[in-house]
Image (tube, rainbow, N blue to C red):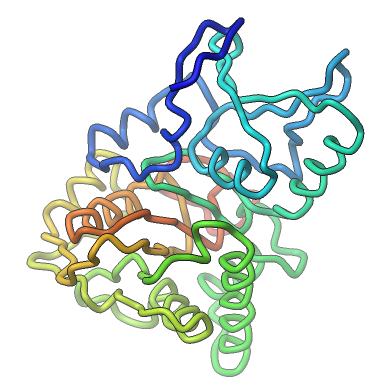
Length: 299
C-alpha cells in the first residue's frame, strides 16, 4: 500500500496488475458507474496536459491502461481522489516526448474499462473509408465479400492482431488464445473463431476455442436487452472443459459493444482455472448498446 500525500488516498499499487473475479454483479457494477468514461483513444484525446504550470499525464480510469502504460513507459501513475483520475507529472520536454511517442504507438486502439485484466479494440467502428481495422470489419462482417477477397482481408486483420499482441506487455506472454465460442448450430463462417485460428498459427500458441461446450441453446443477442443477453448466456450452459492451469489467455472477438459476451466468456475461463484474460477485438461500437447499426457513423 502507498500513501499519496496531498490527495489523502491509499491505493494498492498492484490492484490493476491482477485478474479480478468476474461475475454478473461485478461486471454490471463497473459498467454502470457514471464517474468515468469506459473507453480511451489516445490518438484522439491525448492524456497530456501541457497548458499547466507543471504539465501532467492523466487518465480517468485505471483498468487496462495502468498496467500497460506503466510497463511500457516505466512511469508510475497515482490516484487523485479530488479529480478522480490517475496521473503523474511530466517534469521536462524529454518526459513529454516519451509519453507522446507512447500515445502515437497506440495508434487507433481503444482502451476499455471492464472486468478482464485488459480489454482493447484495434479501432472504433466509425470510418470504413480507409485501410484500417474498422474497414476490414465492415467487409468481413457485412459486405458479403467471399473467395480470395475474404481470405486476403482475414489475413490482413489477423496480422493486425499479431502486431498488436507482439507489441503489448501481458498479451505477448499469453500461452492460449480463444475466440468467443460460436453459438450452437450457427450457420456460415464464424469470424472470431477464424481469427483465433489464424492468430494461433502465426504466434504458435494453442487455440482453445474448441474446448468450450454448450449444454443448451443460446438465443441471438442482437435484439436482447443487457440483462436478457446475460441471461441468454447463462441459459446456454457454456463451460470450458480444459484445465488452463493458471495460464494467461488472449480472448478474441470481432465486435465489442456492451462487453457482456467477452466478460461472460471470461468468467467461464476463470472457472477453468485461467490466469489473466487479455481481451482483443477488431472494433468497439460507437456506443455501449447491445445493438449496432450496420453502417459506421449511422448511430
